[in-house]
Length: 553
Image 1 (tube, helix red, strand yellow):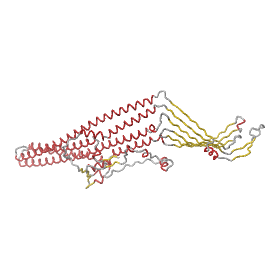
Image 2 (spheres, one colour):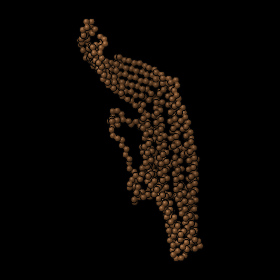
Image 3 (cartoon, rainbow, N blue to C red):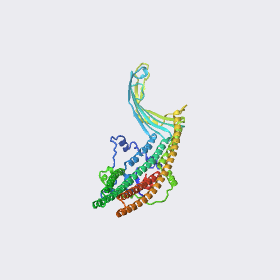
Image 4 (cartoon, rainbow, N blue to C red):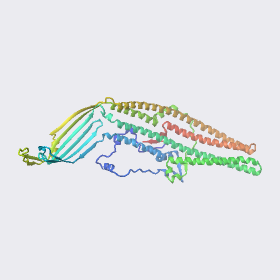
């Protein structure tokens, strides 16, 4: 039985690029303002169960195993939880890019000061000054570890100082600086370690999600076979009740005709009462497992669908297959396809990255910094006379040369007044216990994960061998149950013939009928056990999704 069912929205991290995760809006796009300044509450809507009406036939939910698993994949709440839980690991990749996000910093400040003068050169008895600086800077960290800053700043200053030659005075500065790590945090590889760790965790999360989906699918399939088993068990008990009813009616007629003793009527009556109890119990068990089946496919969420009777079309008897199972081949398949083992091995990759990061943190922090600043000034130039007159007369402004911010900006970009410098700094920890402990933890964690992986391999080997033995045992049990049923049917026929001839009592006939009922029930039980054991074998070998045609993307 093959079918194709795709769980959308799940991404395989092995072939993902960085841009697939960077969906944060950029300033000043409309999406940026909608996200930053939105005041609406997050909306989370739960979808109603899908496709249930597609399987309604004559007022019943008619389900093959294929159709049932399609509904499980579409509506099962636990599978939906697994699908959604991986989204946080996708967001972690975007979060890992945060250190490389650029930022713009702007500031404006206005400050007015009034101070008494303390000397003759203050320019006024009470000096008043208004300063209005404005700054703008763009800063970013590159993947190589380089940090750079580009900024522009300007200041407007007005004063009542009689000696001021520019009033208001306008100044402008353009500065550029960078810092390059030379030992610690040097290079793109070491700075991208958090991104690689996040991607590796997403791959591990994807494997874990696939393993969980496979386990949930196996649980859902077992629920299907539980309903089939309960349905067949109810049928067997109802047939046994019908046989007990017919035998009781015959015994009552014989009693009425005087062909049997009154003391012999109690055994058929007791047998009939016992069969009624068994039928009642079987009906309640069937209702219980049907409710569990409805939950698996989301039918319990639909008021109409949960009232529909269930009609499962798969037979309980397994197909004839006497071929022995290849245990070693299945072990190889399990080691190749088990996603929980893949997730465990993925942790080793994370351990290697953490070890590299810990080694980087042990290095001395040596960095090289360069700065360059270009300055300019502007504003109205006040030409004064008698600035330092000995007779105490006040100086006068003889002329005003017009000027403004453009003068300061032109001087900045003509690089007439540069300021530049270089710095080499070293931070050398004499003893770094934190980094040493982190490095030791990275080594220990890798050893632990290697041991956990080996332990899981041993567990998988044991699970596969046990599952193979269980399937082979179920095959043998089904064959033996069929043989036992054939003999039970022949025994009932023989006892019925002997009872008709009057050479045996009703006790032996009732005993033969009870043996037949147990043989029929045992065949149903062993057949259902075979179905469940086969599902378990497909799960422990990692082949269940492939065998059922489920593709997780």
